[in-house]
Length: 66
Image (cartoon, rainbow, N blue to C red; front, side, top):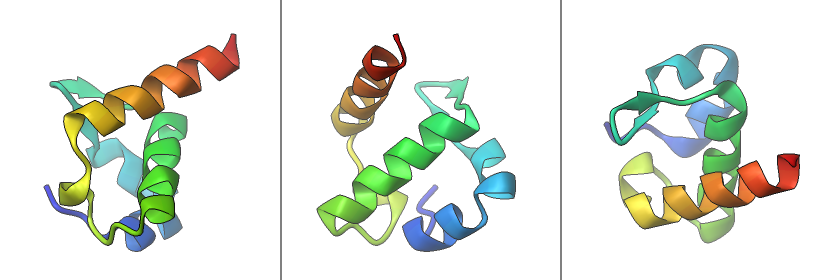
């Protein structure tokens, strides 16, 4: 899925439900963090995010919650 990053973030309350990573559903907070990361990198769609980048964002997000 190559969703528009800004559009997905604007509609986060609905759009997050469509996001998965490595076959697992993502939480709203996880999706928000990944989309915000994509915007900071200058990406326009989610297809530009690599699995490694998503892994790093989720790992950093998990560490900051503890």
